[in-house]
Structures are given as structure tokens and as C-alpha cells.
Length: 286
Image 1 (tube, one colour):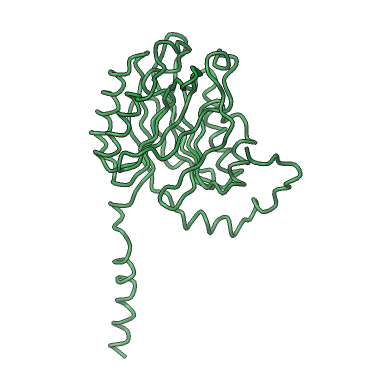
Image 2: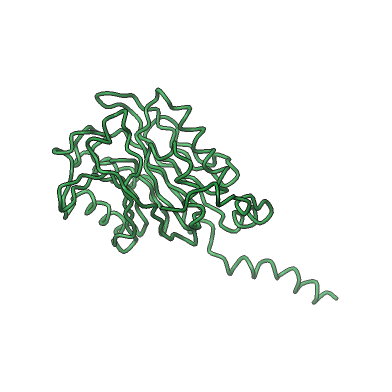
């Protein structure tokens, strides 16, 4: 009997040994900065400094804000980058040097002259993984005149998750997120320059997108100010229940959280709300 009891007691330890140690598991991380207006070199230095201080775990998905190199500017002739893009080269180098997935917002001019507000992801090998062009231009701020809109919902694979990436004003259009859910998204990133005048909308909408789609939501906003607006930061990581599990507050900094893919799947199984979507009331994915 004693031998049997010893064997049973040892079983949980054996199972734990098969898992990656908690301190080495990839995380979701957000980098919140006060962007220097239209100064790519200064902003690259800020991001590098914050990554040095935070030391993200290998394999983590680290998310920067919208237009991280310039701020939310309509001065496309000054900030738009052609191929090769120095901001994308920076993202690629940082991802490779640190062994992380790195997502950030860039301004790109295409071969026919159109300028696009984009979210790009680079792998730990420094390779481009995914590129998304903002679908909903912020007409009130002149973005629809300065930037060409995207037409496609885009996802990439990370650590077992299907991640759909969006940008700022997209957050106000839940049909985009529902379409991504129909394509299999279980996590969303939203990079933004969301002003403090409507900060409460930002925090509530992040949680709403998580709750209604039973998915993780990573919302990264800037802090500080630009020539037009003040920004309160408030970068959040929200879990599939709608709970805020990381909050960057109002100042520059990096926060992170470890997502639970198995927990998400169990939650969706216990509460299969997404299976009740009426396809006749939801447009087909873009």
C-alpha cells in the first residue's frame, strides 16, 4: 500500500515537469509610449529602451501602438516609408535580437503612391509574419483623405492562438470583430492613438469586444500629447471573460500577462454563445 501511495503522490510532479516552467512561457506584452511627433529615430530609441528594461520572454507577442514611429499624423509626405522601410527594419531587428514576435503600427507608401496605415508583425527570426491595412479610416480626423483603406481582415498564428489585428477606429465597428470570429479568431490586437476626450469609450469597447467574441483583446494606446490631442494611455490586456488582466495606466511602461488557451477553449465549450450566431444577420467575412 505504501508503494502505491508514493506512486500516486509522484504523478502530479511528473505532469508538471512536462510543462514549460511558468517563467519561460510566452506572454502577451504591451509597450506604451509618449510618441515623439514625427521623429522616427527618437521613437525607435524609446521603444528600444523600454524593451531593454522589460526583457520580454522569448516567444512572447509584444505589441506597440499605432504609427509608433511618428504619431497619428496626416503629414504623409514626411512620414510615409517606402520599401525598404526603416521602421520595419527596426521591428525586424528587435524581434530577431530578442527572440520575440513584435507588432507595431507603420505608415507605408505603396508602389502606386497610395499611403496606408498598417499593423505589421515580425517573427523571432526577423521575418514578416502578417500585414494588415486599417479598414476604417477616421474621417473626422482627416484620415480617410490622407490614407487608403484596407479591404481584408487579416490573422496570424501565435502560440496556438489565431490573432486578428486591427487599428484604433476599427474598434468602433463590431462587425469587423465578428467577421474575424467567424474566421476563427480567439485573440485580437488593437493598436491606437485614442485621445483622452473619449477615453471611457476606449476602455469599455475593449471589454465589449472581448466579451461578445469570447476572446483575448490586447489594446495598446499611446500616452502623452501631440500637437492636437492629449492621451491617457490605458493600454489593456483583457481576457475572454472581459476581465482586465493587465493595465498600463497613464504613463510610459510595459505590462504583460500570460494567456490561457485551454481556459479559453473550455469557456467557449461551457458557454457556446458563438455557435448561436445567425449567419443571415452577419455579413460574410471580408
